[in-house]
Image (cartoon, rainbow, N blue to C red; front, side):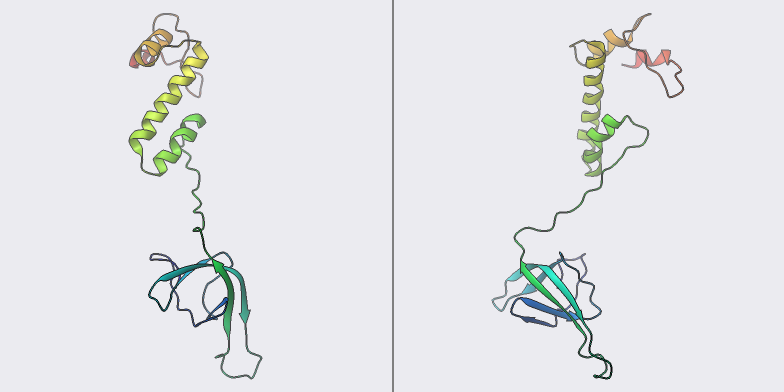
Length: 165
């Protein structure tokens, strides 16, 4: 059997030495993890190393000899799960890089916190100031001549946005 549900499952026809035999229609490939029960009742997990499809010569029965053989080794660690990068469209790449993985893994509160910290660090770097939070944002964005000017994509200044910090 392949790993626990919801992963695909199939019956192993036989276990001979370091090979497992599967029906010819089984979807297995090198690198797959396969679990099977030992006589002791324990479950063993192995990784398929070499998968070979065997077809009986023409005229040799009705295909009952067709099978897949797969050499294996003990799986000491599960196959790594690929986590695709999550881009957060419409946000600056630094915020997307910082918060995207947290957001993808449903750590929403931490994702928002990290996004705000990324903005704060960027403002500190651009302004040369060391304050944090409201004192930083107030000093940098308020007044008639703010240290930094917020702009949209069309380079239109957003005068009302300086008061929102």
